[in-house]
Image 1: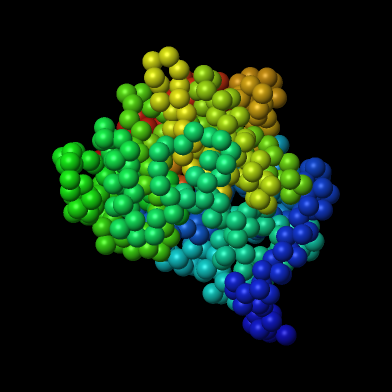
Image 2: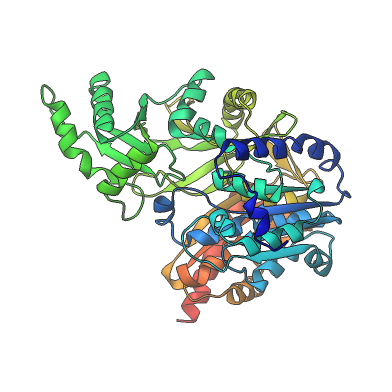
Length: 514
C-alpha cells in the first residue's frame, strides 16, 4: 500500500460518513481519560495541532499570525511525565533554540530525555491558510504523522480550536480530540453565546443578534437608539470574530432627534471605526454576510474592567473552574486583547466565576468538551462592580497558555473556592502575561539574541523562588518585533514590576546596539 492509498477510503469532509466516523473516534475519549490521565507514569502520545482555524481575513491583520502556533509550546511541559511522547506540528520549522529553551524549563527532567520523546513536524508553508488545512493537503506528511503516533489507542489530539478541518484530520488519523465538536461551535459565536448567556440568566448588554447583512445592522442600530435616546455608541461584532479584531464601533453623535434616524444611520454605517487594522467597510460587510453579526450597546463608564472566567469540561462531563483573569485591552476603543493579569481582582473574581458556571452547565448539557472562556464587562458604579456577560469562546484563548505554563512550572494548583493559585509551598502565584510586547526596535533580534539578553540580565524563571519570566512567540521577534511574555510573582505588584523590568531590559539592550 502506498502512502496515498489510505485517503482513497477517507470519507468526504463534512459528509455523514465523516461525522459518524468522528463520533466513533470521540467515543474512545472517556475510557482514555479514565485510564491514562490520572496516571503520570502511563505511556501516552499527545499530538498537538496548534492550528488557528479562524477567519483568514481577520487573522491576516494580526502581525506575525502564524507564529501564534508557538503559543501551545507550553504543552511541551507535558514531557515532564516520563513516558509521555509529544508530536508537535507547525507551519514552519521552530528554531532549535526555542525548543531547547522550553525543554530546559522542565522541572526534574533532563532535556535530552525529553527531547527523545518529542517529534517535531512541519509543513514548510508560511501561507496564511490554517495549519490543519496545510497538513491535510500533504498526504505524505499525514503518513509521517501517523507513523509518529504509533499506537492510537493511547493517543489523543490537542488543538487551539476545533473546526471542520481538525475534525477531518482526527478521522484520518483515527485520533480523538480533547476539544469541542465543530457542530457545537455556533454556541460560541457572538449570537449563540448571547442566547446561552441569556438562558443562564446572566445580565447582558442590550443588543440584537443573528444579523445577516448591513441592512440588518442598520436596523439594529436604529432599534438600540430608539430604546435609549441617550445612547452614544454601539458595537458591531462579527459572529466569528476573536480577540476583539472583528469589532467595530458606531458613534451616534449628531444623530437626528426626530425623523430621519434610519437614513442617517445607513449613510453613516461605512464610517464604522474598525478595531482590525486596514479593515474596509466592503470587506466587513462581506464578513457580516458570510458569518453574521450582532449589535450591542457600548457600555460607558469611567472605570471599566474586562474580566474573564475559564472552565474545562472533561470527557466524563465534569465541569472545573480553572482560572479567572483581568484582560488587558488596547486598540482604537480598548477592545483588542493584548494580555492578561491572573487572577482577576479579588473583589469580583468569585462573582464572575459563579456567574459563568451557570452557562458552563448549559454548555455541558449541550455536549461541549474541553477548555473555554466566558468574558465579562464590569463597570464600577461608585459602590460596587456591575457585571455584564458579553461572550463565550469555545477554544483555548489568550489566557490559556500562560496559565498552563504556570501550572507546569510550579506544580501548583488553582483553588476555585478562593480564586487563588498556590505553589506546593503554599505561596501565592500571580502573573502578568502579554502576546503583544512589540516595538520596531526589536526587529532583527534572533532567538539566540533574546536568550543571550535573558541570561545576561537574569530574565528567567527561578524554580526555587517560583517566580520569574518566561518568553513565548519567540519566532515572531526578528521579523515582526513582537514577543510574548509571562511574568510570575507572588503578587500582582511583583508580576507587573517584572514585566516593566523586562521591557526596560529589552529597550536598553536594543538601544545599546543602535
